Image (cartoon, rainbow, N blue to C red; front, top):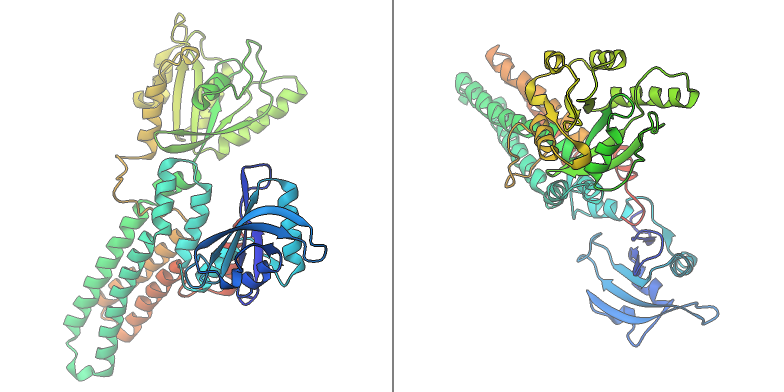
Length: 458
């Protein structure tokens, strides 16, 4: 597969200033030269040079597009193969014509993520760095982007390699004592194994502590805005999104379906779900919206329960509070500018004061208090900007936990005086689990599955 020459559009499809088509493989330079006319022959061009010219149909001689072509020769390219990038005017028609000509040559269409996959297979990056490329593309906040960029640069990879090096030393020590038992002092060997296992487990525990924050920064917090009709849910969505994303009227039941919007609060991405007002209704369409609201409520990481300062709790709201139970929730008491009719003591009986925020959403009052409340729930302290080694990938988390269990078994085995050749099995299992994170021990099927999540052209 890696001996093929591949091509794909690397920029978003549609109108734009420019579009970039990437070609990678051993025949990329001579094949592109067949449809590129310029003063310079691409086969003679030095690496990392840009050349002006025209894409020409080799059969008819017709000029197709005015382009700039960049040549990057192996191994100084993203894939560590010869790479040619064609920069044309942005537009569906021009890009399609160039791609059609390329695919008529000895070039095939790249699979999703195949350029990054080749970078991995050719040793330019490891598997954790390749997976971070997806996070970089999908980042929804500056902080998530910074973390992904660090991961692409290898911060997690280096830490994993250091841990594996410690385990290699441990296994080497055990091997020596297995081969030369006459020189073994069992108590010293057991103490050495316990020390190394403890050190690696402590590092794994530190990485796992970042897992929840890393997942939030990577995927965002699914946040459901719930409450009775006409309480201010859509106004809150618009205030957080800083645009009129949802229709706001004085008519109850205006929102009939779940509206989604991504926003960033203090560097934390939130996937906001503005739900239909939850109440008993005879309206068939509104009933469907209410059921979808209940489903969103179950799936949410965070619930923003909006209550009206100017109205007492009704039966629907009491049921909603009971349904929320011990979930992560912030209670927003809206319309604080109106006379109080809400029984605050009843609200405080169900929720702590630090989870209750008083607002007048229409006047943007209380927004800072809401943002602080959200931050305090999901980040116990200030996120360290200098330590951006966050573990957010579900696969990585599972493998770290597996490695930790193996080391815990090895540690306990030394205390039970189990033969060290049996302990060696657990230490090696931990070493292999950590190796799967960076791709040192993974099968082709897993590699294909990971890279299939990428977009074409990356």
